[in-house]
Every structure is written in C-alpha cells, then in structure tokens.
Length: 202
Image (cartoon, rainbow, N blue to C red; front, side):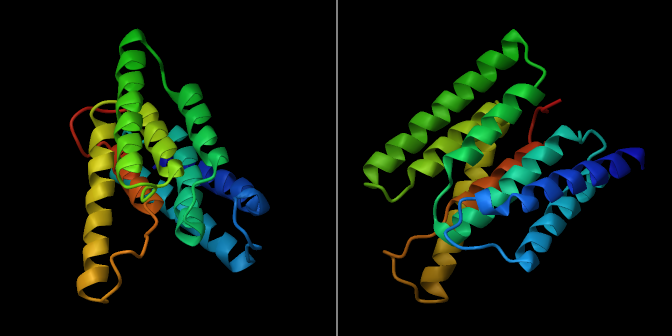
C-alpha cells in the first residue's frame, strides 16, 4: 500500500509539472485544460495501477510514464516525436538506472541494435517511418535493455500492424495513409517496464 501511495504522489507531481508545461510539448496548437487533465489522469492511473499490479514497480518508472504519455499524444496528433522527449527519455534513463558494466553493455548494444534496425526500415520505406521513431526506438532500447527492449519493439510493431490491418479491412482506409507509430512504441515500452517478459529492470 505504501508503494502505491508513493507512486500516486510521484505520478501526480510529475503529471502536474508536465501538464503545466504543455506549451512545450511540441504541438502546433494550444493544449486545452481538458486535455491536460486527461493526460494527468492517465499518468496517475497508469502509475497507481502498475504499482498495485507489480510489487517491484519503482517510482522512477512513473517519470517514464509521464514522458511517454506525452510522446504518444503528440505523435498521435502531429505524427512527430520531438527530440526533446527523446532526450528526456535518455537523460532519465541515464540518471535512474543502477549502472554496472554488464548493464552498460546490455543496454548500449540494445539501443544500438534498435537504432540500426529502425534506421534501415526508415531507409527502405523512404521515410514511411519517421526519424523520431528511429531515435525513440533507440532511446527505448537504452532504457529497457535486453530482452525488454527487443520485446517492447516487437509489441509496438505488432500492435501497429494489427491496427493498420483493421483500418484497411474494416474502415477501408487507403494503404498510403500514414499512422503514428509512437503510441504503439510507447505501449511496447510500458509493457517492458512491467517486466512481462524474462528478466527485470530492477
């Protein structure tokens, strides 16, 4: 219970700071207070739910939830992941991870591998995948390490593929219509934080 309460307050403070700085999110228009309150609520609910579900959940993960919730929203609205959020992810990853030689190697190579993978996809699709996705995928790998980083990308890409298929088959959308990959990468990253797969961030 104490862990849940701690995560509630951390998420509330983090969410309040992030929503107060909504003008710096990277959106082309103003952010309404309704949207700000919705984002704040999502951050708090995810943090409290994660702490209740996972007894090993740390308050440091709540900061990622705050950053990544905004990443998902901004990319969904603008189809771009601003560099500021990639940098914020990397900085918090460097500060909050209890680094050791083993972790440096694992996380470093995971980040490099995902960066190369997404960059190749970007080149092959001729920009079908955004550079923001490439950079965020690498940042995701740095934060999650191995194997969570890989599995997070698998989840993100699979869910994006299923969503695209639904748009094509059910809603008859054009194949040329672009979708925002960021929200799906965030979904995968969140799954990695929960430690669903082998290994642990702690």
